[in-house]
Image (cartoon, rainbow, N blue to C red; front, side, top):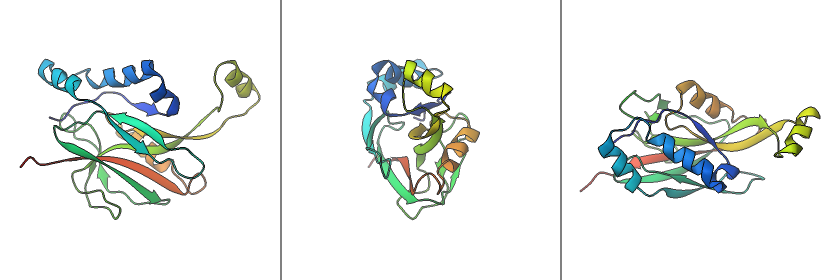
Length: 182
């Protein structure tokens, strides 16, 4: 069963270490799903995927709830610039971009692009320290993981193209592949 997800969430180290934010992430998954499918989804345990962020960054462990009854996650790393053949999700059918052509590093036609590393501007501090940093003009690029599941297509594209040669040497992509029952 494919689940329809309605909003986006930028995943970074702090969001997965904070249970409240993790609950927000999990709760948004079930917003517009039938009761029967909600019960099935709640029964699904999240799979913890190690996401390599690349040079100078510690790997990140991200939980993903599988969207298929039987699936596997494939983590792919490309040098930047990179090529990826995905199409926007078909509303009501799939909740994430779908691979349209096999890639050179392991993604296959039909895989769902569940997440990508991305870059955004922000502060390296929190609380009062971030307020001081904001007034001091200490805004810098930060690398994080963008959950494409249920995200608007334009934001998925923005996240993918934020991986530029000026910011990083690599991009990491997380795909979910349905396993056919035999």
